[in-house]
Length: 174
Image (cartoon, rainbow, N blue to C red; front, side):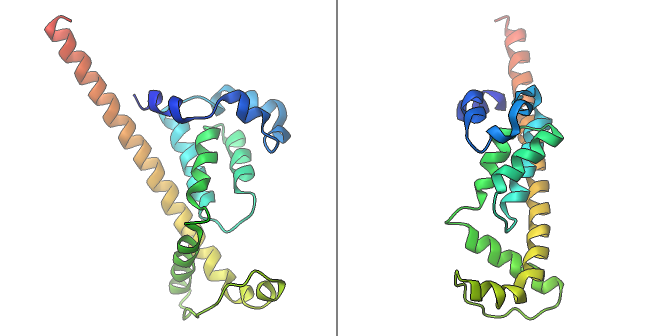
């Protein structure tokens, strides 16, 4: 079952609850559905994490945790999936999102240079925020949908394989 693999790679419940950023959620973290490994919970957690992972925002993990608590889906999976955007991947993710948004809005994509400064945010960011957010939203929805389909498909295939193995063992008399 995928459950065995996921239990091996997931962090311990107690460590997650003791994390400084997670303590703001208090007793809500004791909800068993946040830690349960079933197809619905894992697919929902992955969808939330992937959606927020491609959004250009600060505090993705905290927002993912809040959404998991609200929707009662797997919290560790969502928090881990948010890291799809990391220092190595955020440039291609946001560039692709910007290009998609510019194409949908029929805005000719410009050649902007990123510079972490107040001048850049007040000048150039104001020119790209609409296509960036639209493209990020669409890419987030596509990533979330792909995550749900992937988890449900893999989970189903593993369960069918397990049933077939059990059936073969029963026929052999093991």
